[in-house]
Length: 290
Image (cartoon, rainbow, N blue to C red):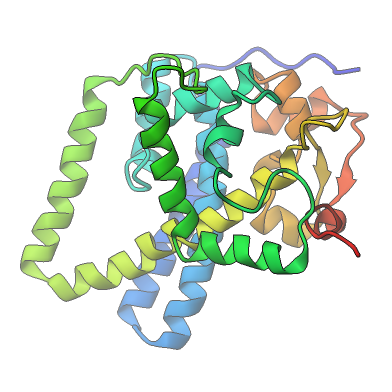
């Protein structure tokens, strides 16, 4: 049985410290690789940045549920500065999709099912090796991201769309932050286009390729197919899994769906007796055995 958790504080300081850590690692990687711009510094930096962008998305996920600060406006400001604006996804714009996912979990109207895998091999079932490789390659080459965008456009144009999206509330400062961010990039490019290009390579290329692929693998690992009695999985990763795929207790996904108001740092104490799949069994969930 779940245990009780402490009342939500005005600001979730464990999350704030985690945000500072992840942003700090990203900044260090970008500055270091730009200072010594060689392929043997750039490639490792991009790999590390991708994993830390993914970790930022996990903390961002808590902010989607307004768990960074008791006041939603402050919550949204913090996460937009730390992650939402630099990663081109203001928190209010994703909140509507994620809240709909919680409300329609496991149905044909589930936003993750409608958007993430339309026209793609994955369908919450193990895949043959060839189709699994095709899926991952599509994530790395932006093909699947384009398919998601096309799907979203098609669904928004349909009168009988399966998407059930709540209204998204954006605070005025969100648009100010977006304007400042893009104005800063434009100014940087005007004075030093080469430096801006190097920054874009280090930050945006991992964001739209490897980071998205990591996100998709994790999403696939978290949810079962429609015929499964358990629609969500919970994972117990090892050190590598915690660093790359399941940081900040995101492996407690089944428990998160049961109690989405519990922040990441309280999940282990809220669910002390949880049964979780070992992280090393992930491949058996993804790859069809013949």
